[in-house]
Length: 227
Image 1 (cartoon, rainbow, N blue to C red):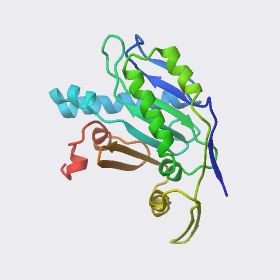
Image 2: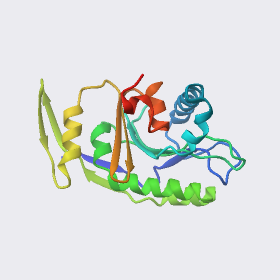
Image 3: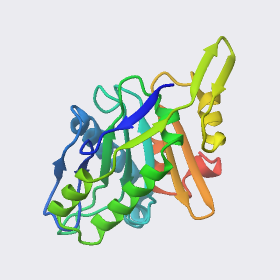
Image 4: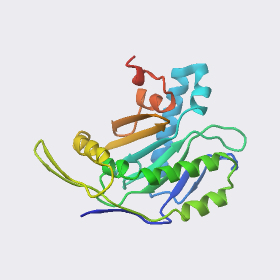
């Protein structure tokens, strides 16, 4: 059965954190930063124009988002990571992203639903970075993240039929991924754990416009059904 493996030391970071004076990057996958930076900058500008005076509070109170991206959306490889609002040493706003490349051939939807423990580790590290963690220590902790090896479900698609084999673990996420398989050419999947509530956005490509605004504001029109 296929294995989903992220090797220790394959994790990187990009963005801003309170102990660094400006943008920084470390260990990022090839091609990731140029695509990601442009996407975030465009999305933040759109949010600022759409939300007006409410933008600052929306950004600073936005949740942490877990994401998995199909290859080609932010570099040639698929990517798994977390996105969290942050600031640099002088208070300039820009998200912090922690990420790692997905193995060749890994389904981003299955990888997302089967790696809750890894996402939790990345979220804890992102929050530590927001709490005055030095950059050097962030790099050390990224490098020390454990090797993750989790069996991915075996999915066979024949026409509109899906056959799924799951070894251990909770079946709901694998089932959701199987049902979503083939619905998007280049999917990106986003989830956020909000206590008893969870939010999920599935896009074809990276979120833009109202989708990006929904990442930044939990009362955005995408969540309420408005325009």
